[in-house]
Image (tube, rainbow, N blue to C red; front, side, top):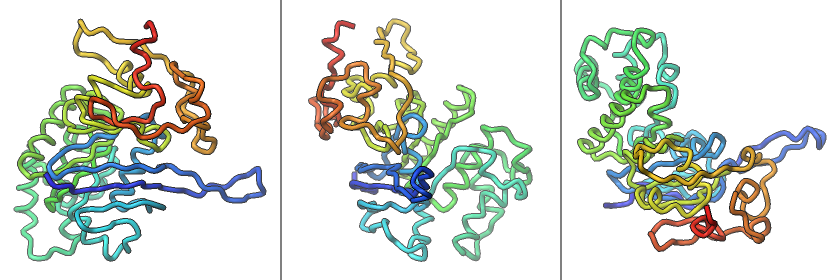
Length: 327
């Protein structure tokens, strides 16, 4: 498989006003030095708590935020710093599906207008929009008569299918899906994931999924990256990361996730407090003030990106220390 997307040492920086310093402006790194790659036809999941920077990273890839440093390469094209006039043609190949299935759809447009709008935005003339609407509705498993409905007339699951149809109207190569199952019943979540998997196979689509739902990640992704305070703290093949977590934060997320196997023995991990503000990042390992396995060097030394025997990568001074912790 060829690499479709290559993100290298990317920072996304925002200016904030500091009231204590007479209105002076400071900058914060919502995304701090992230590197990852996605192969054509594969799925990469990004997991983390709210505020971890996962959506900001996705929006930087989609050109909705400016990456302050680093490189974002799509095929042979460098995206960082690309003027909007040059990025616009790529919006038919890199598309983002937003989190709110109903709120992301204009209430003034019917479903036909919503799912065919990408053709108008990209200036594609000569298209039979009725035929395209029927094709797209069929693709996502909705009947043709849905074309005349409005967003308030459909359910959350149906709205998510409309969002998929709209996103895939121009047959993109990379779909960025932000919380694609948020707010859906478990059975509908399964239907949505199966739909994405089917369309991926049919279209050769690469998918970046942004989620906090580890069951979604395990079901559909090939690789997973765990984000904390704007940084990747662990990354690797999904099954390896689930089976052999190296970083305590990954272990904590897995321990908090419902386990479908009733006989599985789970290690209970309690994190200390809430994530710190990125305005006041901790020294050393930025997870140390919440880590139940904190080591003396964790508060002073920044952990390096290290490859584990399992093939995954992590940023931890004492990976898998819990195996010898007596718990």
